[in-house]
Image (cartoon, rainbow, N blue to C red; front, top):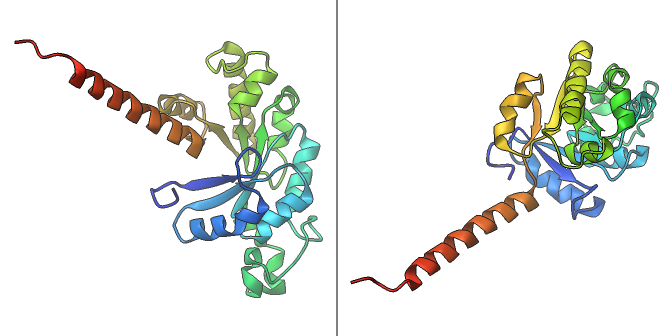
Length: 233
């Protein structure tokens, strides 16, 4: 996947089948390409973020961030003391196995991406404040959770959802940050882009496999049905 030209690839520890024991080889595999490897951690905790960064993630996505206060904690977990709360271990992949040295530790966060997910009413209500948190780079909309939270499960065309994503877009624009979203249909990219979104997740490997197999199965069954029809002389 990392070799097909993606800008970034997300290793999902929240909903995916992998856990932290799988993370290092996955990061090593992605790191051999030009694709930027990001990690969605299991939950918004300092140790989870720190573990992903120590193993060499180029950034993290934090699910279920509901407030600016939570976002400030996330930003602190990306930075070492005295500016933040990330633990320092020089001989890790995330610190270039010691080559970054003590002098480079304080600025390490500048090369990392901090993405927080907007997927609840509470997060939407504080979108403007979350976007203004120093150290948060991307506000990422999770359409499934957000539409369920808004009482319109799965209805991304609904006016309530459209208003919600406009609010997120306006929040990041005023703060100079980026807005991201999981795109369910490729044709929706243009609509999101016109609203100011620039950070797109296009699918998951499970969804891609599902679509590919359904297409192949449908083609095979049509071919079999056509071959079974008696010839008309």
